Image (cartoon, rainbow, N blue to C red):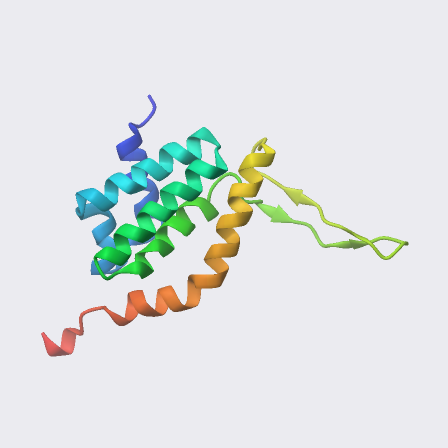
Length: 146
């Protein structure tokens, strides 16, 4: 039996570590934010690049409005660690004419649109990963001050 979209979204978010910090846990406890992630799941299932970008933009706008823009990191992770991301990237093969052949292996058959979605998410994740993780973990409560 397939999980409901809400349970599937919750499960994915938890697998990406949202419960590891109080701010990350907001993705589950803040109803508005959680529903935006459900929208992202729907967009990803539709395999529409425009819908995925719009869903991520909505998450970014919402997290910015609550002063926690760095939580957008979980949206990039949500897409990046999906079936559209290669499970294995082979070594680049240098061709005789100087070109390069790249070989990627996926977990399942993927469409060109899914590859574009994952590549975009990987680019965004790589761009913001360090600063967003730094912001996320710098906001952990200090047990010594409790």
